[in-house]
Every structure is written in C-alpha cells, then in structure tokens.
Image (cartoon, rainbow, N blue to C red; front, side, top):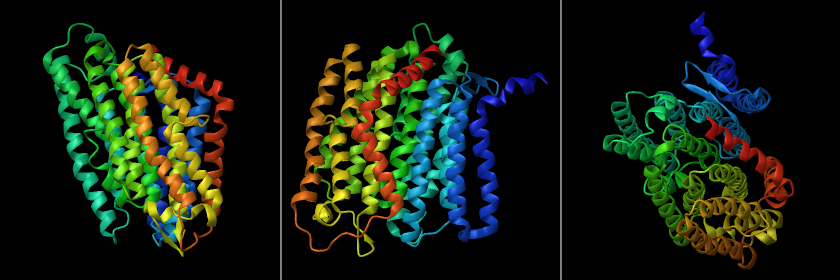
Length: 479
C-alpha cells in the first residue's frame, strides 16, 4: 500500500489519460482501418484538449512514480504549449493529407503518442525517465516523417531522421552513463544535492554528451544536419508538427536538466549553451539566404529561432527562463501560422514549395499574402508584432546576466535574417504570376485567422501572459 501511495498517480492524470486514449484508439484503428482515420483524428484532438484541461485544472505540484516524475508550474506551461500545438497540427494534417490522397489512421495516433512522450520529457525528474519519454516521442516521429511510403523524399526524410536520431540517443545515453558513474545516481534531486562542490572531469564530459544529445532534439548547431532534409522531405503538415510541438518539449527538457540537477554547474554548461546559441543564430541567418525551397528556408529559420531561445537559457536566471518560455509560445504560433500558409499554397490542386512560386499571391489570395507577411515580420522581430517582444525578453535577460556579446550577436543576426523574410514579402507583392492560387480550405482559414490575431494583437494581453511565464520559470528554480 505504501508503494502504491508513493506513485502519486493523480499528478500524472494528463499522461495517464493520453496513454489510455492512445491504446483505445489503436484498437479502434486496427478494427476500422483507414476509413476510421477522420474519427481517430478528431478523437485524438479531443484527447489532447482534455489533457490540456486536466493540466490547467489540476494545479498540484509534487513528485510521482517514486521521484521519476515531477509536476510543477513549469511543466504545466510547457505541456499546454505542446498539447495545443499537437492538436492544431492534427487538425490541419487531417484535411491536408486527405487532399494529397494519404489517408492512414496511424498518423493522428502516432502524433498523439508523440505528445505523450513530450509530456513525459517535460516532467522527467530522472535520467531514466528522461530517456523513456524522449524515445517514446522519437520513435513515433521517425515513423511519421516517413508516413508517405510511396514517395522517395518522405522515405529519405524518415531514414535520415532515424539514423541521426539513433546517433544522438547514443550520445545522450553515454553522457547519462558517465554522469551516473561519477555521481552515483540518476535522480535529478540527488544530483542537485551532490553536485554542489567542484565537479570532476568525467562528470563534465558526461554533461557535454548529454547536452549534445539534447541539442540534436532541438536541431541546434552543430547537430542540425537532419533538419533541412527532413523538413523538406516530410509532408508539410508533419513538418509543421516537427517545427512546433516537439521543439517546445525538447527545449523545456533542456532547461529542466540544466537548471535543476546541474544548476550549481552553471559555469560549465553556460559555455556550451552560449556556443550552441551563437552558432545556431549565425547559421540560421546566413544559410537561409541561399534557399529556394520555402520549407528548407523555414528549417534554417527554425534553427535560428532555437538559437534565440537558448539566449534566455544561457543567462541561467529566472528572467532568462521566463523569456525562453515566452519566446517558445510566440514561436509556436508563428511557425504553425507560417506552415498553414505553405499548406494553403496550391495551384490547380498541386502544392507549391518554391519561394518563386509565391509570386502573385497578393493578387489571387490577398488574405493569405497579408497573413504570411505578418508572420515574416514577426519572425524578423519587427514591432509591434509578437516576435519582437519574444526577442526583447531573451536579449534583456542576457544583458541583465552580463552576456552583452551574446545579446549583440543576437541583434545582428536578427538584422541579417530580416533580409530573407522581407524577400518573401517582396516576391508575394511585387512579382508577377501566371497561374492564380486555389481557394484556402476552411480549416486552414480558421488556423490562419487565430494565428494572425495572436501575433498582431497579443501584446494587448501581454502582462497576464508574462506573469504566467514568470511564475512557471519560478517554479523550476524553486524545485
């Protein structure tokens, strides 16, 4: 009885519910086949919405599963972002994949199971539970990337993601084994108490490998090599999912690992994060300039955005983590909105992905063009759009932490990246087109309207949201 009580199952209600829903829907899919795809898809969305409600209404903090799982404000904030992004990705994927003739019940189910893995990652309080959550997410994503088995590009994307993902998992496990060997524990709580003195060289090497494995999951440089090919090769709705929900979960896990058990080693890991952040911002700004495919451009943009988010983490302060959460929330909305525009870009029923194909968008679909322009201005960090405030908070956190050079590099790379964002706007509004664009489906239209409203007018409700992110960051440091 004592063992059962120590599990404290009530703290993991969203995860338990998602696991039960996933198993039930798996049986339904096996029974109904592909004709049940839409039913399973909307049931998956409903499950994620219920998981959000459970996360919001619970509000309890503490440890579960004998200390392997932690529930706090930080986890709740990140889970709500991940579940919301996953739900929207499933909604747009159902219609988009059906239009492309790809109707498979496994798709929404795998996205649901990946969301369960994300939740376990965010609440991980031990190196073992960290790895279990990470692999649950990754295994589902490997299959989702190659869901279009009849196309070479999708199969190649899944294979590259799998091979490089396996490599990163090996690096992460090697780092975890070194940390266990030199500290004697895998528990975050025990590590936080035992690593207060001068760390050994083996422990530092283990931390480096752990950071390398986690950097792959957020596609930070120099572990970004899979990102452009997978983003381009995977179906666009899947790419939108990759760019949003898993990124939030992985970067939240990154913050929990570094601030929690290794909080006293900030002098060691801060150097790693600064280097990774600078490399990601610079590569994301420079490499995207030469891209002709808009999905590859968004891949490099995603790499750059991860670099900006890591600026907040590099500060190692509550303000920095609060800025990180704020930036990721804004990033999710911008990314899903931009990919919704890419999904809506069709001529005579065929999707287009080249930047040059955007020519004439403002004439045949002006609403679509203005929506993409808003997302591009926001990603460039131009006020008064939400992206400006996201960058402002992480840069201010870096300045307050004395990381002046890092903040300056962030501003300079933002200026460089503005070139390719504005180039897209120029193509849409000033280049001539020969064939008009198709009408935007109703589902994508709703996603676009909601995204544009948040990015444009989000600052009006900024104060309560910033208070929430600050409280979430505070709970991470309090733990």
